[in-house]
Amino acid sequence: MLTAPIDHPLNLATQSVLTYGSYLVTAVLLVIAIVMGIRQKTPFYVLLIVAAFVGAFAEPLYDVGMTLWFYTPGLWNTFTAFSIPQPVWAHSGYVVLYAGPAMFICDRIAKGLTASGLYQWAAIELACSCVFEMIGINGGLYEYWGPHAFRILNYPLAIGMLETAQVVCLAVAAAELRRRSTSHWPLLGLIVMFPCTFYLGNFGAGAPMIIALHLENPSMLMSTICSAISIGFALVLIFGASKLLPAEQAAAVARRPASSHLPQTA
Image (cartoon, rainbow, N blue to C red):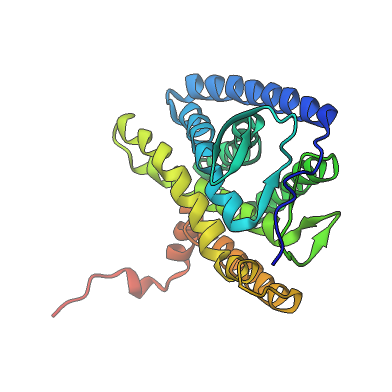
């Protein structure tokens, strides 16, 4: 049975760069959210950032499921749960990786984003996820220590696909909440919606991979098969979310035969 690298040294320089850098980007995103909110007369974008920042408090659940360990000696941490210390940059990282892209996707959805456009944003999110996590992993901050398959520069590709799926689901669900809300108060639901979509994507689509990682006798063969299944599930989530876009639904209605729009008579 593999165990977490509890005594692995932490790269203090990378910790400083990632901490200060991610909080700087978080500040920039917050300013952008405020400006967008003022122009559109809504607290939606700021609340989306707040939701991701607060949602990072549930990160230990993700760490246990995905066998992620933050190198401990010298770690600037906020709290410890499930014996896993949490770095201070986890909160800013959530904003940068999840709320930032979701914020821009939501804005595009309101302006008529189509499925092809959503797929492009999904590709951008996947690229951002890979870059951010590869820096953290190869920079000596943490690692996915379980028998993960499809690693690129020590980063499991399935993790990136699941993160992409959960951001897409968050954006589509959040945009729909905003579209249907008759006041600003329902937008507070974003704070609950964030962890719901986060674990829908990562623990829902990622369930086969998570089970394979935590088998009593894990194997690379089983992990590879289950990781491939989870990647497939993530793609299904992204495809399904694209069909819920208002622009796509309007186009589907427009494609129906004229007779299908007529009311049925007895």
